[in-house]
Amino acid sequence: MEAHITSSNEKAVETDLQANLQSLRKENETLRFMLGVMNRKCNILQARLQERKAEQFMNINLTQSGSNNETNYKKARTEFPAPINRTSRILVRADSQDNSLIVKDGYQWRKYGQKVTKDNPSPRAYFRCSMAPGCQVKKKVQRCVEDKNVLVAIYDGEHNHDSNANSDIGEYSLFSSDRIGVATPSSNSMHNIISPPHITNHDSPFRPAIALDLSLSGPNKENQRNYVEKDHHNNYYYNIEECVASLTRDPNFTASLAAAVARSMY
DNA sequence: CGTATTTGACCGGCGC
DNA sequence: GCGCCGGTCAAATACG
Image 1 (spheres, protein in one colour):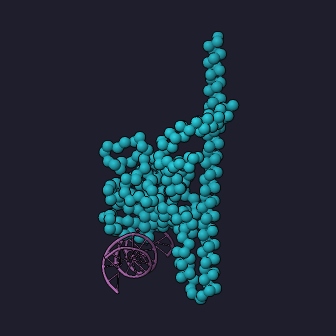
Image 2: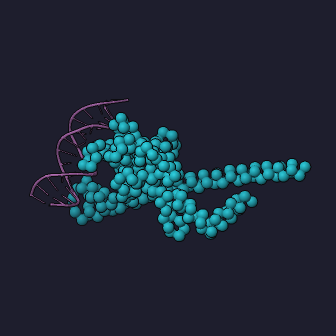
Image 3: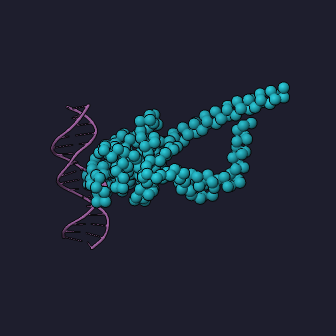
């Protein structure tokens, strides 16, 4: 009898927990969506500010001298580069037999050049974002000198528009297991591949690791994070595990977490 | 025929 | 000044 009551109580608690978990998931989803919207709005505003600055610069030059528009525009573009000149390096698994330097990342690119560089026998392809007229994001794609199965894509600048990756994630390899990792802008070699530390690799140093993508959209968002986490004491961590370990060591954090979980349950 | 890609020419920065 | 190198331009070409 008593045992029966206990089990029904447990069931009630379980369904309660399930419901709470569901509502927390929904809340999380909503917050992520809002963050995504704010991110996009921020990018658009930055692009508009950039255009205004360029226009102002052109106007000043036109009133000061009678030189032609194109020269002024070119100068304005160089004087005022992309609002935040971010660069990020992304490594993507590719078939060594496939000679195309195409990295599917959810954006539309127009190729405008190809060049063989000194340090790498594989040609480097130059792309410009063609999804939005004002977008000045560029990317360079080249096969890794150390492993031809890996494409190195270097992104330069910040998109002023959304990608279509969110709507059709499965199509784009950068958002699936094809992506190997993100390296810091200063890195010059494959040793900067970032992968979960618990994944060991005995076959090849460049074998793709599983990368869990928590970003909201395109590759430039990766650059903002670069897998570097910062805690509330302003300490930087270069991998998730280290960050989690530090947080769990912090009694304030664990107490706050426990309180938050308790609040969500009752 | 319009659009995307290719590819040689050109440009600017840098070191000598 | 010269040569090297990476990045960009633009005419030619390919493609749907």
